[in-house]
Length: 113
Length: 113
Image 1 (spheres, rainbow over the protein chains, first blue to last red):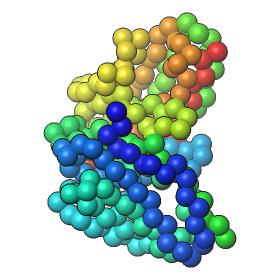
Image 2 (cartoon, rainbow over the protein chains, first blue to last red):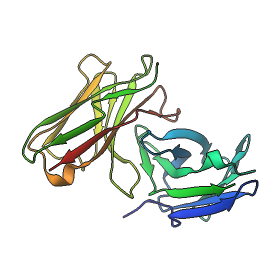
Image 3 (cartoon, chains in turn blue, orange):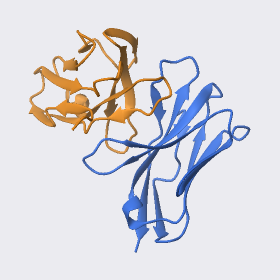
Image 4 (tube, rainbow over the protein chains, first blue to last red):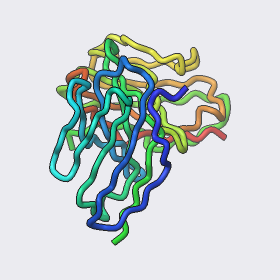
């Protein structure tokens, strides 16, 4: 029973265009959401996060949007760069937990020059 | 390098053998997590330490798995009587706050033949 779902295994985007990665969740008790990026043979690295009391958080080229009523969040990358090519994981923290992250299966983003 | 350090990076073992992985977190982080990642999946939570206390364990952590953090610094994850299904990447992560950025190591890849 996947509580955090990333339904697109892969996404291909042209350099300079917008990349939109989507994530759906089922547990309304999640109170914090994060995006991680992972290159091959490396551990995941933190990208951006959002609290459940907000609907948007922006950091440079990266913006995360949260729609609580739809239990949906998305990561926008504008403009996309070839170095953004990686696997992106959506993750959530369950309210009341010790902070352990529940991850989706990831979306592999390829940015073409 | 003051990041999260894991060793060994790769371990190949025969079924039935015991293996141990070590994680050295970022020195000022009192929270330490172990995750497991298999191909095509996101990282799955195994266990969590705050200082030397193991405060949370996933149901994925069978009785063949044991984790320790004896002095609240480094941690070890031991797998006894390994099975082929244990083949995975074992990731360690640390942070200071429940919703603080989780810093991951590069992982220890286990292959059970």
